[in-house]
Image 1 (spheres, rainbow, N blue to C red):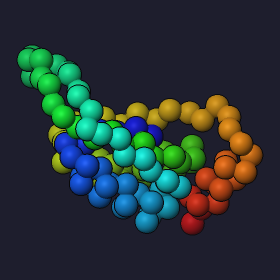
Image 2 (image 1 turned 90 degrees about the horizontal axis):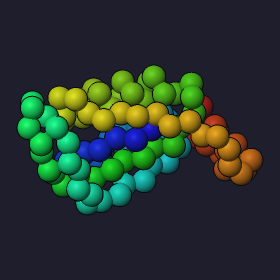
Image 3 (image 1 turned 60 degrees about the vertical axis):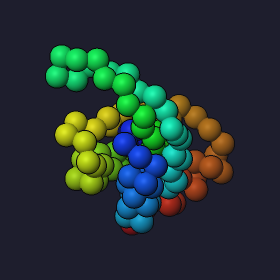
Image 4 (image 1 turned 90 degrees about the vertical axis):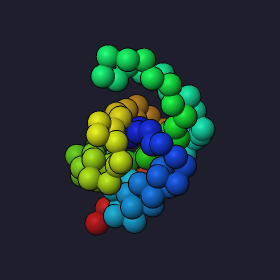
Length: 100
């Protein structure tokens, strides 16, 4: 799951909440990044932090709701990218960490 936030602190708060709730196994915060986008008919440029949370397909809906409920943006970026493969050990750990 990928999202962006207005600061590293905001990304850290979203990540911590998601991991504590077992909605993701781990999160990576990258930033600052520059985001250029159109909003309300005007081109905007902002510094943001990118948040990547590794999760399982059955947790995507709950993780999406968590991000929406805890994000400061009116329309946060929330994109699910499927995991096409990886090491069996890592994927097993990811599943174990997102189980209730």
